[in-house]
Image (cartoon, rainbow, N blue to C red; front, side, top):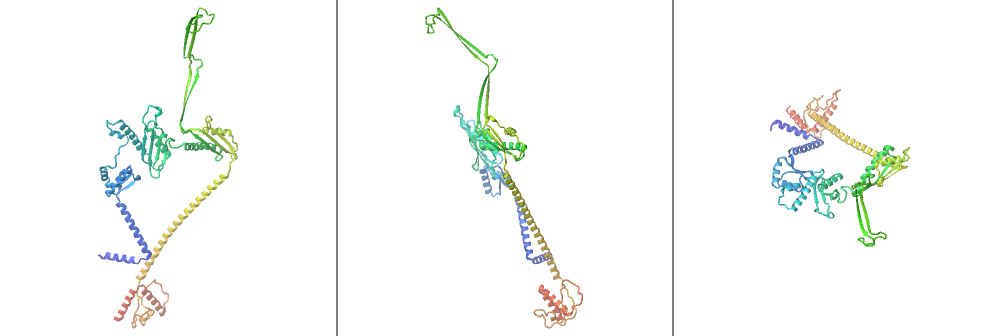
Length: 541
């Protein structure tokens, strides 16, 4: 091994051996974090890029594709609720060819493409069944393309045509949908599905379409409204109408001086009425006029063809005439056809309470006229409007204001507590960082000072000669030499300080003895080496 490498390794070992327990712990944690970071980076860089193999798969096709990938030990991922399969980019085309060889994904014919496989010899029954399947497939494909809808299935019940009106049966449909995880279809989207299905089949009404989701909830029932029943429709209408009237009253009377309540009855079923009215035309000539006259002749006293004798006095031959006139006059004819759809307002009542203490001048008749106009009141259908001046109670307002104040104070307290917690955490982190920095600086300075103290070793002459060597080692536990010549001893120079005055011999001896004892405790090996050198030099002399 080269000398430079050996020297570097030795210095590194010496540096590590000089670490304290805290420094070693920090170093181990840092090395572990660095190793984990390197491992994570290497794993991310070595991870293959995934690309879609197939998307929009059904559950059965996705399961078959996954099984094929598992058998080939190909890594994969599923996204979009399991309808999309991701594989490494390098294996896309190979796996597509393998899936095609296995007949995956299954190419099930649906929609009007079914007619492409029909022959000219198909029976009428086959044609009707194929037509039904084609419509179901097209509807399922269209509904499945809607937002938040992953799977759709449509079943149609198409009755046979009948020439008798009394035997006609209306077609019905049932729609099964599966949505994305945790997503519920809004009423507007369900209504769109209902109308889409009913419009695709001749003679089907929206109320004959049932929609059910994967959780078993009925979103639209047969025989009811498309998506909402009469109560839901009435509630929506009442809310909308009350908001409109309330906005008008707040503008006229001020906010909080009036309250509105609307009750509405909705038409449960569609109705149709035809009215015909005939009126004569004054001064108009008859459109047509027909007259017929019949004459009869007989002899007196005898019975004729009339079967009766002529009155007395009528002698000889008699004549009888009968005239009949048919006249067609011109008249006006009016035909009115009124159709009332289901869900329309059959009757509504509006009640308005005005704060008598909150307004100075209030014209009840004027307010009633304004409310009638804003709510679209129709007296002919039985609508009613009631406007009354009453004294409002302020207890509810006071309680509501107190609740608002309490909620506001709670929010402010929560924000203050959150700010305080954030500040405390930030302060602890900052103080920890500062403490760690200071500790590191102190440790480094102490180690640097210790290294400088160990490296400074000088031999200083003794101010006055010593008679014997044991004079210096008198404080030691065991004298090293009994009879040794007196020689100058090495001294360790610590922090050099100027000596203002020469010290007495005894003081100098005590200080040298303390320095030697301290040096021996810190570096026993070096102390022993110095003593051996002293003995050897003394013997040679």
